[in-house]
Length: 351
Image (cartoon, rainbow, N blue to C red; front, side):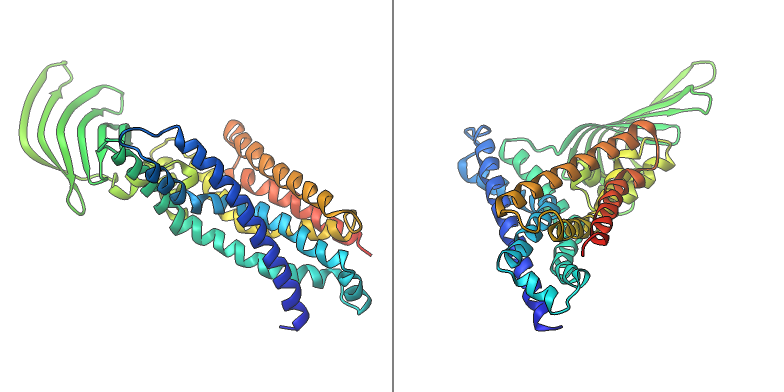
């Protein structure tokens, strides 16, 4: 790699890192002030601080595309203000080559997006959720969870530590929609490849509506509902891992349930690195054009508006895909494709 590539790349990298730290600092301040409202005799100041720190990975993940956009505008803007871009162009360096140099540091942050989305964010958000519940006196992770498998419906009263279910109620229906069996268990404990129901009470209902009741102390329950699925169910889709989202969405689709929000979030996470690089291309292309000789303040304002526009576009097309039932892939990809076309068209007009 040439010294010029290293110089341009390092300038842009430091600008992106600086913007990311500035945005993160502001977010941490406001998040900490928001947590202060939750203080109680059991939820203390240091607990609020730990909660804020645990949310840092998800905040960084969400800020990376906008930080890359503004960072490129600042980094290349500094080079333009010092006439360094002009010297590079005069030396025969094409705008496409300069843009390529800016994409290299942005690629680092794009890969960081994937790392955070798959491994760090789900763990930190889950830890934050469980810890806050425990500190505030709750031993249950979630309450009132419904699960469906074919014609069988299960209601879980409470989930404790993922591998213990409390108050499990079963309802089995025939293909004609007639109730055939009900049952309830005091607890269900995960035993590696199945759940073990404790204190099982059941009622069998025949075609004549006659009921036969019974009970057993313990019963094996084989189901697709695993602790891993429960981890997915207890987190919002935006905080779940790529693999967890895809597995849970596939399961919901197989059971005939609405998997749209999970598929949409899956594709948004897959598209996040691409969207980051596209935003860098867009920022670099407009800097060579309409923002070539403006002030740094105007570049910052432009970057903020472009970032907000892209985020709102993602939300708009994402919700549209859920409402009008077209592929969530296009709902996640369309904003990135629009930004890509805008960036390429701006690069074509660069002289």
